[in-house]
Amino acid sequence: MTVDVAKTRHPYLDGKPKRLLIDGKWLEAASGKTFETINPATGELLAQVAEGGAEDIDLAVAAARRAFEGAWGRTKPYERQKILLRLADLLEKNFEEFAALDTIDMGAPITRTRGNQQRAVGMLRYYAGQAVSIHGETVDNSLPGEFVSYTLKEPVGVIGAIIPWNAPLSSSIWKIGPALATGCTVVLKPAEEAPLTPLRLGELCLEAGVPPGVVNVVPGFGETAGAALAAHHGVDKVAFTGSHFTGQKIVQASSGNLKRVSLELGGKSPDIVFADADLEAAVPGAAMAVFANSGQICSAGTRLFVERKVYEEFTARVAAYGKSLRVGDGRDDMTQVGPLVSSEQLERVTGYLAIGRQEGAKPLAGGERLTEGALSKGFFVPPTVFANVNDEMRIAQEEIFGPVISAIPFDDIEEVARRANATSFGLGSGVWTRDVTKAHKLARAIRAGSVWINCYQAMDPAMPFGGYKLSGYGREGGKDHVNEYLNVKAVWIKTG
Image (cartoon, rainbow, N blue to C red; front, side, top):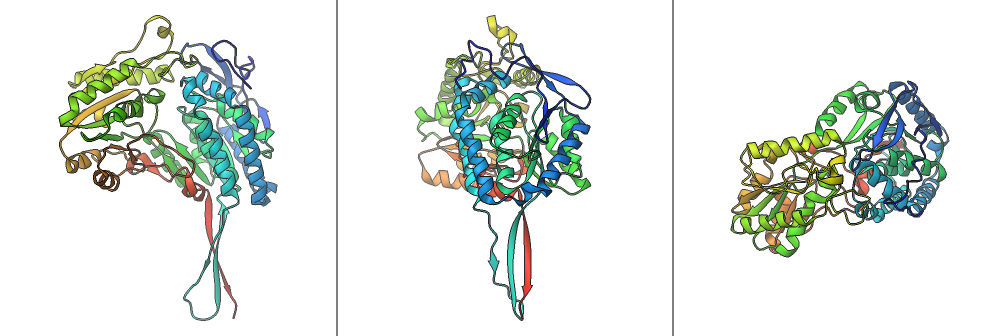
């Protein structure tokens, strides 16, 4: 379906309240409560959404448990693969609608959300391939006598999935895909700031033939629905993406039944530019490592380390690049930087802009909220580059989650490796150099889950993604991701 997001009302926004998906049915919240979701570029109301709470989580978990212990738990890998491939085909057919919905609900430019098609559809097809590739192994043990020993890979069970607002479609697939591939069931709690795409994906799951109870979608607030899901004794694993503060609470909540937990959390990623780099490629690369999605990416390269001999030239060029980007409503095909997702996020980011100036950092670009004309109705912050930053400043240590670069000079590789690691986070990192020795040395030295060399934010379904330290544990993507949803059972048979 083609959707002209600039001129027509989105077909999913039909004026009706959006309900919870539980056990294959669309239900109002048990409390009867709803909440509003708005377009962050304009402030306009998009829809009223049922506000799930603890009682709704109970219903959804019970439905997921029945499905897991019922027919779904007996499905063959080929059947699960067929469902995932049907879901991928349906998403591909309707992708324009999904791209537009992401743009309207959380603000990302339509060019960005459209550009996500290969990744989103590709993830589902990757998990479809993994569905028929799950296997244990025979083990040649060393016990005296005659024994056969082997392992089985079995689904963990009911998954509680809690996702953020910065990439609703991809985040939903990253949780639903491996659950379907492995034979698990899932209760998905979308972020209250952007619940529409996950709900629409729930419709597509039913259309693809996902049985009732296998995929449940319960929007609501973190302190109610999210907390209830994290602590629920009927949940076997929580898969969470979000802030490290919430991640720590989820770990604490998981102790009740010692459920499995995987966490993809925040970051303050270093992006390191050497004087020998291809600066023509490094300027846009370093800029969009932060300015893409208005900086609302957990692995954004917000600490820009630049070798001192090119520091002034390079930071000036990155600032000029940032100034050249068009900021506006994501529905406009010309927009390159959209709004922040909410008034709360706007307050957070502008607060850090003030902190940066107070700490002595110098804004070479941006630094203030945009309020001219139509932008006054939305939550817009321009691409911002701070120079004169040192490692101790809050803007260099704390995750801002906005389009804000802290540019820091360095002198040699040993120094920058040490300073790159001088953070509580370890999610992403970048290195720009023509020197293969430097590239390999830093790839090993940097304590982060991803190291991008002469590129940034490259992603593929077959590659794992995740963090060190406060950036979490567990991986999403690749075979490691599928294994997060499986238990390993040892089987011993004495044959003589």
